[in-house]
Amino acid sequence: MELSEEFPESAPWPKPDDQLFRQDGDCQSVARLKIGGESLYSYAIGYKKAGDSLAMRFLENWQGNEFLIIPMIFLYRQYLELHLKELLVSGRSSLGQAADFEDIHGLSKLWKPCQTILAEHWPHEPSETWGNVTNLIKEFDKLDGGSFAFRYPYTKKTQGRKITVPIDRLDVRNIYEVMQRLSAFFEAHSDGIDACRQ
Image 1 (cartoon, rainbow, N blue to C red):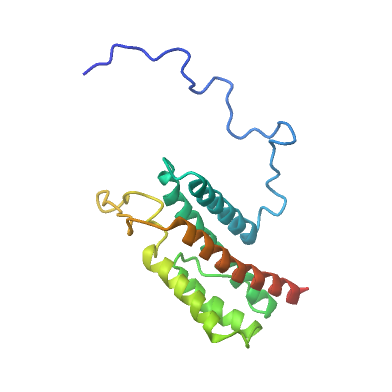
Image 2 (image 1 turned 135 degrees about the vertical axis):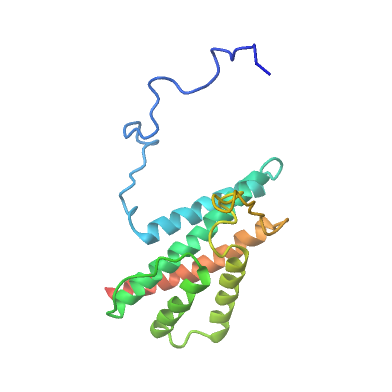
């Protein structure tokens, strides 16, 4: 079937002089990316703040905003992955070890050595706290172990096998609040390790 009707000339499509990555503009619209923007920590915090923004937008007006939730979950997961890697790097460095992490995506696999390092710094951390954090990491990892469930609707391999979102409903206020507590735990320990290194 051939479409005979042309699109209107006034359609808001890209113009000849459009650029995505312009570096000029007024002071309120230009962001300086390299001010703290090249560390695992700053990347992690950026993903969390973006996830928080989507959660808050949904909570302010949920109607028509359900499409924000899958990206929100992905952003929160990416935050956790990068913050765990940041803690591994900084924690190992402060102990005089090679400041590195394995190039893996599994949150539980990252958390296990991270917990060991944090326990060396804080040997008196209550076991209940370790258990609570471990449970949340495992819950996220069970939902999205490879960082794909909330990134793509189907795989490139295996003839485009559909990736099914593993849950049907989500209490957005709850995940927002729990992520605030989880990030407070990680950020306090990041600050503590920074203090030890100085």
